Image 1: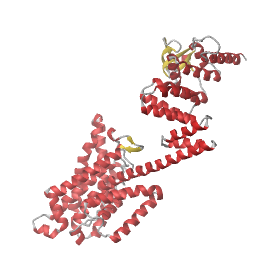
Image 2 (image 1 turned 180 degrees about the horizontal axis):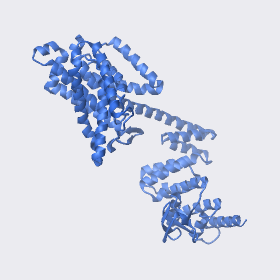
Image 3 (image 1 turned 45 degrees about the horizontal axis):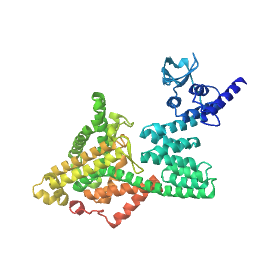
Image 4 (image 1 turned 90 degrees about the vertical axis):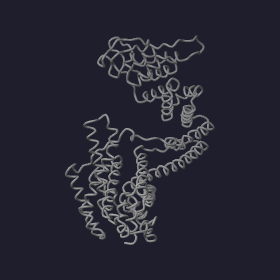
Length: 539
């Protein structure tokens, strides 16, 4: 009974202290008494104490509330004084009432100020209200966003005051949206709630959509109609964003397919070899990245962000050497026999996969992203991951570099001559067998650097190449055998088509639809989008 009476007395004192004028003289803010109520056992008195502290404008009260939110406000058992600790586990203490140093203590000497769930929600809103005017720009934005989510009617007064003095247009807009969210879910006049629905709708994100749809249920007809109209506008906006996001994913997938297929397009166009081991060159490039990164992690951990720049040339040289060795040892004896090359390279792919399993094991290997490829950037509502963005840029650079090699170098001239007319090129003194070996090495090397890129967005495992070999052949056949521009067009077309069809038809059915469409297209244009003249067509 005594504790109940004590709590009621404290609650009455807090209410009286909070009133600036009520037919009485001005009463000064008694922070020690409020803190005592906050540290007591009566949760009603605790809530009143928190609201009084938030409305007081006292810097010490604001600091105490923030410390309470951080779990650093305690009651010292020795003298029952309310103190602020440096950490949630104790340390240096400050008197919450005076702001003066109060020694130090461990958590064994302190008793935490307890709150229930209702008071925690109230505290979050009050701290947010305090941050609205006293925090930095980012803190004020975060506080406005927190109030938008909590929609605490008690924060409406501080929010109005913060809006009146806010100079930053972005922060002011966020505060006005938070105020509109509070008004929309309150029992204020219909005209205010209708106007608030339009303000919330201007936020145009999924949180605003959920708020509007919830507010439309059980609201007066005018408010419900305004909320539904704003929600419909957001839904249209989000549908356009989803389409743009899928387009970006399609471009990134197209860049991956371009990297995986462009080397295959070179070897297929010049040599007519159906290389089923091309995916394993991609896989070897990914494992080369893993090995280089492990060496950096062991011997130069401070330079780990630069391991990718070393892995690129190493992967190209290693996979090019493997490709040249395969061409000289196996494939050179099978030219002009496409079925035999298919079977032989398929067998080679199995051998390479098993060799990798024997060396690295069957489980996935982790290849970490460098810091400059981690995270994402928000672009008008689109989430653009840096890893995929860099892969798009990298694929374009590889494509341009291959064009320069084919158009501006003697090797590229010889390769094009062999592609168009092998007997005539041989009669002009071009060593066609040497061109074949170098072409196969170039295609394998490009596949290796594709593996470097794929290691940043996919699991590095012995089966990595198998996931891309079929799509690579589809790109080459659809774009035109041996034509780099056709490979670019085919990769981007298939990548975007896959990502647009997946949300509508599912991943498996989307793949089937793409395959059927390619079959129908090849029936009309057997040579692909960009038909190539020369040996590949005549054969």
